[in-house]
Image 1 (cartoon, one colour):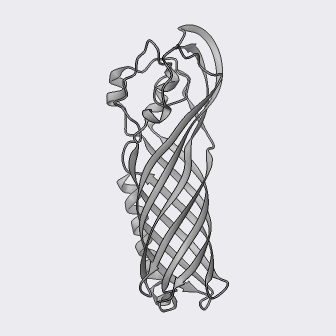
Image 2 (cartoon, rainbow, N blue to C red):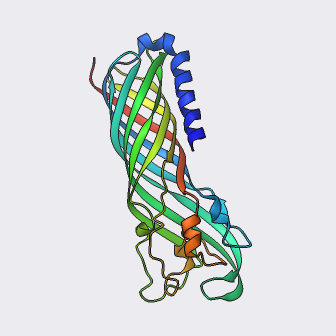
Image 3 (cartoon, rainbow, N blue to C red):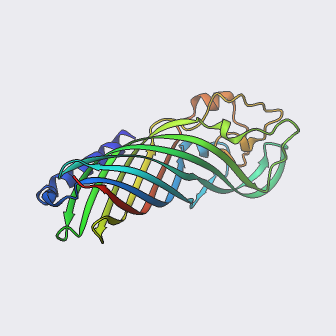
Length: 268
């Protein structure tokens, strides 16, 4: 994780250095920015492959998001932004098991499953602004951190597991409610009027801490294996307490495309 973080920070400072000569044309002022994002999401943990002789497979996971931020470009070069947003993240899986750990039957089952997480985000970013095309188009590189708060979670499994009476749980309880993410954006803005900007760019985020609640009190007599990590997948082996304690940190990553509008509320 630190290697990835260093690479993004290095990229940010390289952009700042290379584009410094254009900074005198930056768009100073305070803005309100509305954006939508379409992102590729991934829940990453190498231990996900340990619970079957036929390892779980990961399929494409694309989800939407949206947000609003207050932007302060306080100088020709630097600024900051703070805001709030909502996004859907998660992971799609598919695979085959030859033994069902729930029923202890030898049976071939082909399955598809998904775990979906709904988050509120509260980012705080520093910005480097530069203008290209004589004040018509400029580039912003921003980086920082955001607080992530999980508001809802669910899983879908086909074929669905049989859950004994009393064995139903709130999927959100399997995950930590709060986390922090490293966040970075690269966005081009087109000034098509004195007050409005059209924004288009890319986004990357990665949680800094474990998203899974390893302290959840699993009960093997009533909880199907689909509740165990990785959540929603069928398993040939029921994870043990030691499996949970020794499990690697699970992080949530996303890479997205941003489309937005910015409104100048106060020139500086």
